[in-house]
Picture 1 (cartoon, rainbow, N blue to C red):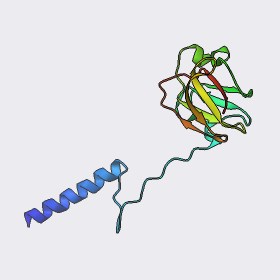
Picture 2 (tube, one colour):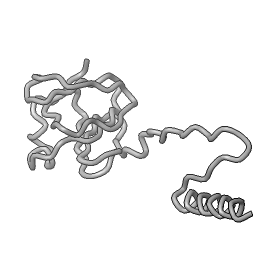
Picture 3 (cartoon, rainbow, N blue to C red):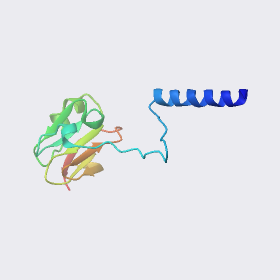
Picture 4 (cartoon, rainbow, N blue to C red):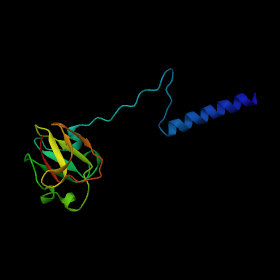
Length: 133
């Protein structure tokens, strides 16, 4: 019976560790599929009608925002771009798709975001200019 006791002890220890680390096993079926976090404009704090870029993930850090439809050089009025920081997230609160570029004057297009949407970027570049698509 010593083998059965060791198995019970191992099972109890496994459940205790799983509970501690938030990986509670599902009972009576397959584990539930993980749900993706919701992306909302409120989480990104972007004024309606503006295009916003952030120095942090998920709309955190320093925010720069523009009401004009296009900007040839974001460093003109964005402090974290002037400091050399990369853009890690965006939110497009305009009524049009915005395409953005790694260089000033709309050169080296890197991506675009539809109206009313946004999210995290790779975080390895700056957005130096943007315009409607």
